[in-house]
Length: 304
Ligand code: GLN
Image (spheres, helix red, strand yellow):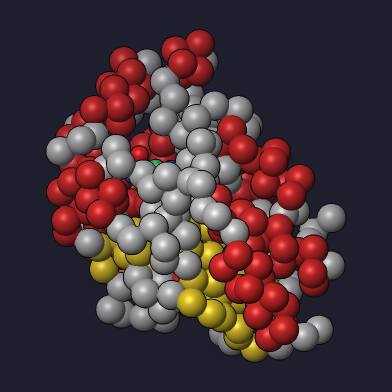
């Protein structure tokens, strides 16, 4: 497989496209990003790494962090975790409140905001020093101790977190939240404000492509059964009300964030990250989705 040529083809195609998406503005700090940034990094289990563009520049991972927090919570807890958060696609936007009222405060899945806020609550209850242990977990997965949060993004979201505050309050009223609302928002916004590059994300996601262990490591971070489950949730819920469209066009488990990043996984083959800040109306990177669709088309490698 000539991955180098395939990425070159995608690079040329993307350069010729008009990017009609919009950068997220509801977190004011994210609105400052240059919309023309584009990076892609492909990390194959046995054929090496290929990349282009701004693939080594760090950006705000936002909801991609929900995969790390779910994974960490799954290492600390068994199936009882899924009594507090379901594993069904929501078909609704990432920050929607409506289903929560109908479904008595049990979020549809861990990758919408409501579900990730329950996972934050669990991590706060289980960990001695949740923020520190979370960031160390991400550093360990990516093999890079310099990974950190962007303080400006953190502060910007903290002072504009009205919807997330509404979600936690509603869930608390149903008895699905144990800790103080401010502590949960503080932790959740912390995890969303982590900055990583495409190359670092592709590395950190190796465990999902390799049954729970990084490519060149014997250390099992999570069991292969749990890895399979995280991948299943990425496949069905990783793109909110566009999960079906992503499956249809790309055919891989993956997770997006409003910073414009998307990470996708082909179990047994590769991890891949794209970053392009302008989002489509469903909150997923417009050109990022295009680039991944072309990758699975040109390589013939999707899980279907
Ligand atoms: N921090 C963002 C929020 O809670 C994450 C959303 C996202 O990336 N989809 O709104």
